[in-house]
Image (cartoon, rainbow, N blue to C red; front, side, top):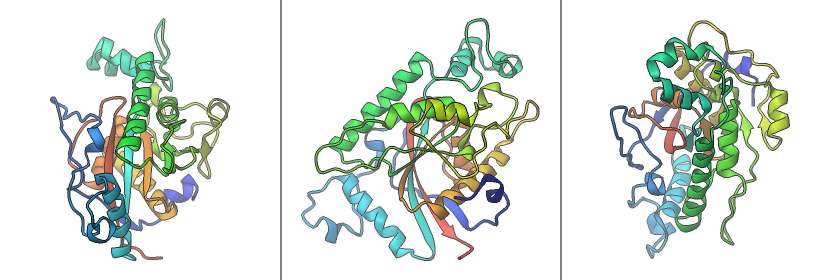
Length: 305
């Protein structure tokens, strides 16, 4: 894949839209919080490919959907590309726990510019014990759904370079066992700089070095051009949602152009999910820590090779 500098200057090749009609969500509360849905919320429906793939109607909904998904690229070949992206918000970090303790107003007015208090550090925040529990609960979800519903595991894993996302990705996916006959892709996550949280000011969003990541997460790989020290975060200003959405669009351009896998995962942040919603025109919702939601994204080709 191209370097970060090259990505930010290339002309767009795709127009991205979230495709509705295949997954259900149940927003709750004033922020429209969406939890991890049973079976990822896949709607049990028939597909044009069922007659040839499942004439006896004996296969599970996820099997039929995956077969249908593969047909979409063929039917729109040369015009569009489709990917199913499982988007996970990291488990609770120490910064989340501090904001809950002091309230959002105090957090924003005082604590976001500090690296911690007398007992806790939230610079590039690690997971709390609750966050670890949430990540392990996600692993149990994947284990059960993949085994009983044949929900496909990601075939490529991408993660924000911030520690809480690296931890969540590792705890959620590493070591999942599937029944005999079911295959899974090797767990070799790729660290993507553009997947990180909204930039600037908040010390919890300033990342550690690439050397620290290599030492603590040796099973992770790095995208081309990943630099050791954080070159993006600044102590002043604040990336807007529009700017963040543009950054996520650049990320999608990179992934859709260079990754042939159709089912992938992003381990990321609430702000990045909000930016992905804007970038793809998805209906608005909010994800609490330690939950995962599916995005079926169509990339319409506007600049052929």
